[in-house]
Image 1: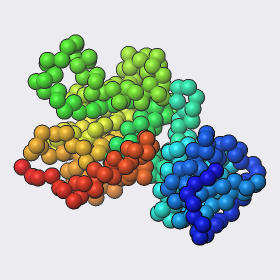
Image 2: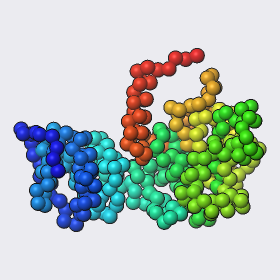
Image 3: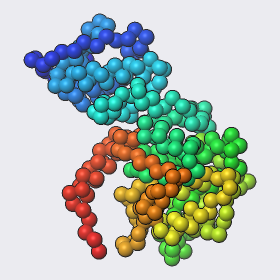
Image 4: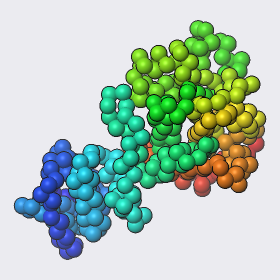
Length: 329
């Protein structure tokens, strides 16, 4: 593996653990090592059973490579997202080995894959859902807020901890405009609920999810359909909660019955309500912050588990609005 030329830079030697598969460590076409080279401005060269690291920040690059070997030694998958996460933790003076976010399996997908938290933020979120009956999961796109909540709901259903799963989402434009859409009412609202269906299909498979939906064990509904109901022994998820009004949020929270668990997810930087309308999620943080039985989890850009570019997009928007706040009406 070759990289930038750093004739006068410090060189560090890292021994390759003999139990580690080098092909998995290096990646196809050495892409894993190339990621480290690009991030830390180093050259990584293999010499027999060692990797020689020379360049701008060889100490940091060496730590990351050692953590990558530790991941493989535990028979875990080493992919681009995990390498990025290891690098992000190292910048904060933290170790992936110590964080151990993915050791506890939440549930298995319909094709048998174990589903685990991929970051320490996600692990904290999952742990809070286990401990609290009402949890707010707030953070940017791609941090797994909804997906993990659905996984926890499916796990609770399989363990017979609850009798049904209720998934709700506000349809921001479901006023008069809804009447112009083709199809019956369910067909009109389904596009708003598609992300919830996608998560269910991953966990249960299409056939099982459809069968449970027909029985009423799983409901996927617009938020407006929650009014007037009291839901006992249910796992209730409200997705895209930043697009609720304070009145809708209060209505939703007061649907909770005995033996139920509620998870509210949202991104307070992506409010799609009409100008002048307050977000129920933003207000709920202020109203409920001192209720000790309610958990608030804040996921950050480091918890983004989509393409690495998503995290950069999130950071770019945050930085832009920090210096160019939108004008108030």
